[in-house]
Image 1 (cartoon, helix red, strand yellow):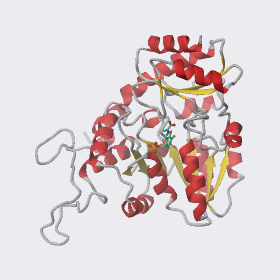
Image 2 (cartoon, helix red, strand yellow):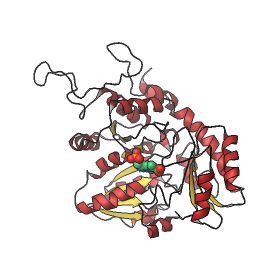
Image 3 (cartoon, protein in one colour):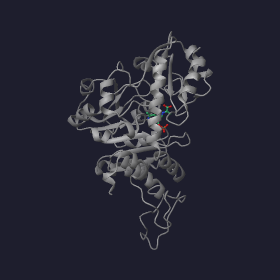
Image 4 (cartoon, helix red, strand yellow):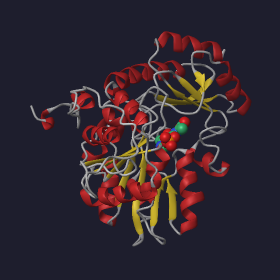
Length: 384
Ligand code: P1T
């Protein structure tokens, strides 16, 4: 059976993988080597130096290409390193249109690093594609989408954005960290590049920091391979191995994250201390119909705002949680809680974050795969 006949749950395990030739090892060995012997200059077996290629990293790169339905995969030392490589394809004077609700570190990279080099960033809500189309000009080279967004769970129509990007002659990049390819496959919807903080659901166990790109076309992939090798922000073989191992259970984990996320969102919606809950599965969530169309389910990320919207109340709730850990990050098997305004989104200027709804009383939950009754009991005691 060829790989193209395999369904998603089989691709997470087998996609792009081969048993190791020398021993038949089912998992790729952790090739902990910086370099490779040559019989004469240029006489090598396809590997010269581990910044350029490493067999364990390559197994991971083949896996992400396979599960995203892309032609090519690239792995980096962090999600931000992957984003950094994408923006390095641009030149001074080029412009990017980005969602205004996005991970604070992405915003910081755009505004505090790349703005200095003459790249211009426009930030806008992307609920409607007309808003984005109105910002297009002859310098627009890239459209940056995160969906669902971090932390407001806004849903952006990937197909509609692909059309705007195509009309503009720009590339569409989708940060698929929150959804994962189990829930959403942006390349099939017209994206050129899919980006992941694999630190999150793909690796899935809060033990790795790593970034991935999945790329549709060879021409774009070659430009990115050149940057990956020239700038050198690659991940090591051990982290590549751990991420590859995580991906093999992605489908079962995310299925449970979704079930638990739904139960928690519904519990919070009924809670008297909670003002609003942001979870794309609610009929009332903005662009819920698009989420229903482009995602298989609604994920395990849930944000909520407390009544009164006070900093001290949000801090008290996240500090009282016991099964949920108060921590940055998301997407691991264990449940985490965060306070975006002071943690993950603190690098966004306050007036900007308030515009997107990241107020002081907002709490973000990464719902893990524990017994959901324990998670609800924990929230109950923290909110009481
Ligand atoms: O942390 P790193 O692997 O470099 O990935 C950055 C990143 C990119 N995109 C999204 C949507 C993200 O959520 C992140 C990292 N986010 C967190 C650490 C967080 O707690 O939101």
